[in-house]
Image (cartoon, rainbow, N blue to C red; front, side, top):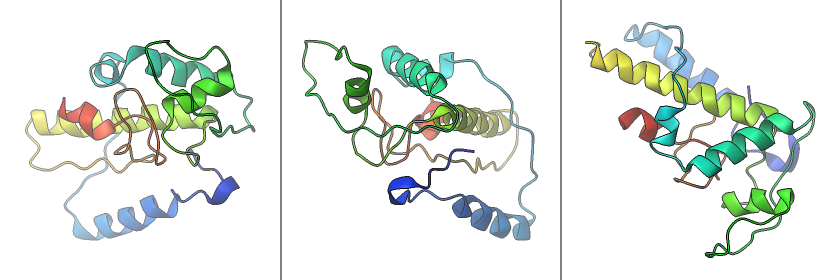
Length: 158
């Protein structure tokens, strides 16, 4: 699971456990195993360069290391910056959304969970809910921020 203790990280695991506790009291939901879906669903919503950058950078970071954006190049038609540190700010919209190895893995799992819920609706379920971290609603086509990396809801809706 993706969780950072530095910089006053506000997206906390307790959010999931609190919601799950309430959902389990309702008997409206049955827990199901998340299915794995290919990248085509992500690429239908997010820019391929952004997706590749996020995956490659996150997976190249040492397991116990976290990096935060601190350089924010102005986006123009000149293309991406050459320095890796500048790329982080090129794609990020704030200084609070860190990247580490688990950021990509958790965001990818969130997409799979949202797509699993969407598939349940497509195949006849009346209700489905994907309880995920990181949430995803602040992620843009080619940007991340607000602790959101892939917009799993938009991907599932697509």
